[in-house]
Image (cartoon, rainbow, N blue to C red):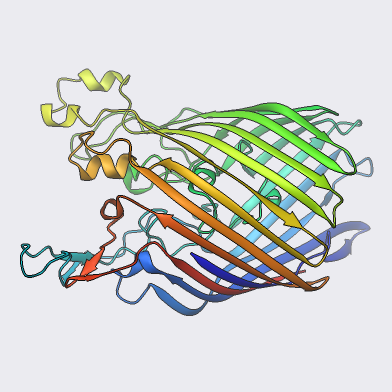
Length: 432
């Protein structure tokens, strides 16, 4: 992946408007430009977009009371091109997907799905919004000592780094895969504690991303609706110590989430795992305008039809369907750094993670033929701030994906190799 971005950086808030003596802080951000994704070469020209907008977000936030104990935040996103699953018509058969058209039998290439999974997707943003153009939309109670808060409403999950901490922020295509796996948007209740040394969060959420945990019931789940009546339970606890010249974080976090319910033979689907476990480390040294940050994340993601489900022993389930009930575990992580000065920044992230997921399992006719596949990524970032509000950013992401066909990515077209591992964007980011 290669990216070059022109960025207008925003102050804390762009505009304050008084409504009946109540101030509301407004801010916004927009990203538009050229996008190229080589994994989309089998989608009839969609691999390169000369110009399109992927993100427009307008935010309103402030305190509801003079004591600042009740606060609110609303992110309205009239345009937010989420990474998502979307079936857009029947597959079209064309060409040949073999590495030797003279000796191999012809392998018909198929296309038409522009939004399949993280590897083959025209979307770019991390959070899936569903059918409502809202990201954060919550009210929050904050204690007088500022250490305790309760947040109610639509909100991003918390077991990963705060997106504002990372160099890729909410861009899902220029982020490590392990990071993308553990970011989601939900609706629910969250309690947060932030002390002088320890911090923690606990929550019960509903909703989900239909890409993660596979395509259950054609994506019936959303940030507001879950595919069954259980909750998503989240917990994070660890060290968070900050002074003027350093910031140390070490967290352990977990989410327990079950999708779907009763097995249906007609659908060939039932209860699914969608669990996450993470360990996070971050250490920043230096001032706000000049600092070095080290960060790392270890991720364990569990998907697949649940082995422990009572439906496995349902006599109505055909013998050939029982082999689908397997817990699929992906483990991996990333580590790296970024260096920030007043005018420029640069950084590097290396990631290694198991590629064997449910898509690979299903493409191998539900057999564990390719366990141990390792996916490796190298991500490079750099940027230069032209003014307080204008910066040029660069990003490059090289992915070694050992199972492209599981994402309907062809590697040859009529015998000609296709590079599916690179993505490119040249965008303008405007914020106020």
